[in-house]
Length: 176
Image (tube, rainbow, N blue to C red):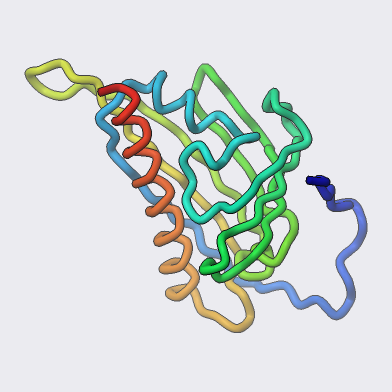
């Protein structure tokens, strides 16, 4: 599969209206697995299928998580969009933080200027000492012209929630 890298330096078309309203929210998921297990899955920017749902195919410009890498994702037929082009903006293995942006594809029309920050924090369960990881995806996204803040938040919270639930399922199976 050929990876299409958008030219993010070119100016926006003059007929493109940008929304002035932004949503800034976050979704959390507690996972019954150590942070190292969860991070080993999340940090695979080049392989979002490791845990993200609804992906049919994906390819990436780098398999080594180089900041500035792009991934090209096509979604399953039942998904409301077909294509997302995403850029890795930051990755910090010490702090367990990854930041990415949706920069192209029809997914960027539904979620304009989406920027997600995924962060992990480990905590110990009381008593048994079982390690748990709290994963948070904070996001900022413009509200599309044909939508409102409530609908946009519902859509993104649902998608992120499904992905974090799937991450929990994968990580807990690995650490069982």
